[in-house]
Image 1 (cartoon, rainbow, N blue to C red):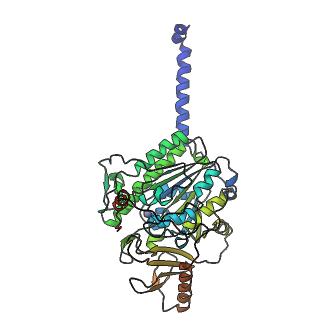
Image 2 (cartoon, protein in one colour):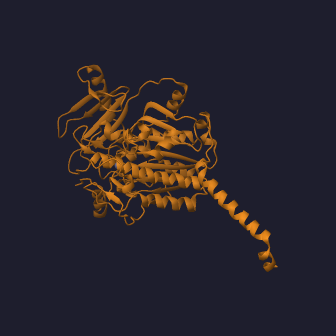
Image 3 (cartoon, helix red, strand yellow):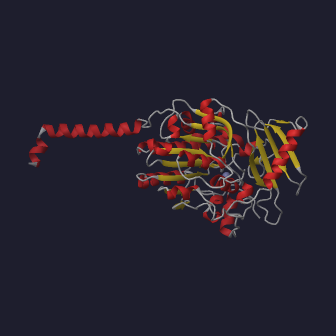
Length: 465
Ligand SMILES: [Zn+2]
C-alpha cells in the first residue's frame, strides 16, 4: 500500500499543497501585525483582557530628548518610535533621581527617595515595602526579571516578588561591537538579556507573564558597526548606542509578534535617568538633578493599536508609573504611595482639558558613594513652568536656582530675581520635602557590600569608597 501511495501522482500533489500551505501560514504569522485597531475607550478596558502579559523594558541612562519619538533630529530609535506611534507617550516625564539605585527604588515602590530612604550606597529597599512584582505574582502572573546593573541586584531588595531574578552570564562580545566608555569594565552586552528573553518567551510564553528587562548598553556606550551612524564624539557615541539598543528592543517586539503574543501583551518602556553632556558643567549622571539627567521617556504600547498616537503633555514621573499601570490593569494599588495614577492626565488629554500643576520632586544625595561623609541632599522641585534646584548647606554653600521650565523640558533661563515670590515658595516646598515622614514600612535597611559587589559596582564606572 505504501508503495502504491508513493507512486500515485495525487500523493505528491497533496504533499506539495500541504508544504505550500504550511509555508504560507508561516509567512502570514511573520508578516501581519495581529493587533487590532481600537478606540481610546479600549485603554479603560485593559483590565478586562484575560491573560494580558506585561513586558517592561527599562533602558538604563536613556534621555528622552535623544529619541526620535521625542523630537530628536537624528533617527536613533525606529523600533521605540513605532511603539509610540500607535500607543501612549508621556511627553514631559521625569525620573526621581539620576542614580540608578535611588531612582529604581522610587519607581518600583512609588515613593519619593526621601521616603524610600534608598539614597546612599549601602541602602536597600525594605522587605516590608510593597512591590509591583508581588502584586502581579498574587494576581497570577509568572514574574521574571533579566538584569545587568548591579545597583538593582537582589541584595538591595529589588528581587522582591520575582520568581526568577536573573543576571545572564556574559557571552563573548562579537568583533563588530564596540565599548567606548573609558571607565567601563563590564562584560557582555544587552544581547545577553534579549537572547535570554527570547528563551523565556519560548518556554513560558503560553502562561500569563510579567517580564522585566533592564538593559545597560546605553549606560556603557556600547554599539556595533551597523549602529555607528552618528559620529565619534562622546555625545554621538551615546546616540549610536541608543540605535543599537533600539534594534535589540525591536528584536524582542518581533519575537512577541512571531509567537502570536503581541495582541495580548502590554509593552512599557521607561528609563531610570538621563545623561549630561556638559549642560551644567558635568558629564555622565548620578551627581545632580538638573533636567538633562532626570528627563526620561515613558511609552506604553497596548495589545491594540490606537488610530493616532496619544501624547500626554502634563508633567509625569516614574513614581506614577506603577500606580498608573496597576489602575489600568484593575489590580490593587500600592498603599500610601507618593506617586499616583496618571489616568486623570490621560482622560484630560483625550477630553482636551487642563489640570492644575502639582509639585514634583527629584532627589540625589551628592555624597552617596562616600560612606564617611554626611548626606548632601540636592532636590529639584518642578511645578508647572518653574523648576527649582535646591541644595542645603553642607560641604558647599546653600544653593537655590530657579529656572523657567517650558516648553523644551530643560531649565532654559534663570529667573531668580524676576520671580522672588515663587522662588521663596519653592524653597519651602523643597525643605518640606526633605522633612517628609518615612513610609509605613519604616527606614531603609543597610547592607554590607562585599568586595565582589564593590568590584561589580565600580565596573559600572562609579567611584565608591
Ligand atoms: Zn542607571
